Image (cartoon, rainbow, N blue to C red; front, top):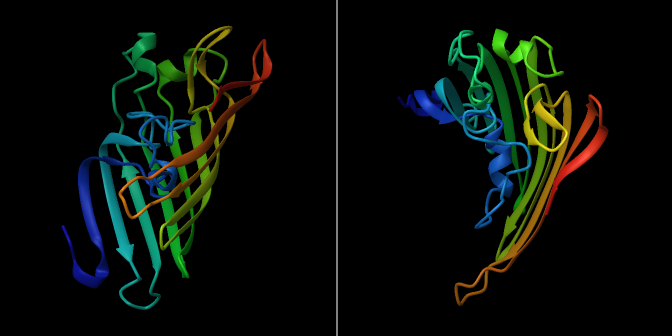
Length: 213
């Protein structure tokens, strides 16, 4: 539902507000925005039961300033104990986002998300905190034929790792993404990108990098 200058409200399966900033690096044919985001992983990407409010320009008061607020209801109950289901569960959560079009093709943004973890999630693995949290900061330059974007994100008890010496939610993950593109008039768009996820305080293995492209 749209309310003119007062913003819009939507409910259902939607993108989490972390994606308001994460989408800036999600422009690659493969691997874009894959360092920490996954569908149905709390509020990092697309998920169910999201009540979302967006406002562009604060009703014309501040052009270029966009804000978002979001609530996500609980998905899957505490009776779902299968490990393949743990990564798609979530408790009640909320998130906020803001982006600002500075001008000259430059934009800056940030987002924060905080969710309850289900009893099954808290009982599995070593990341046993009650809450899953994430924050992200990003910059984007989009002018003429040149596109540049980068973001830095930290998640806590949110990113699911499956393989090697560790399976479960990582206590802390720092993720970096950067992408550069040039749009030729012929329609060809070559891309150069860097993505890295680094897990910290991983029980039994310490710090580790499990994805770097």
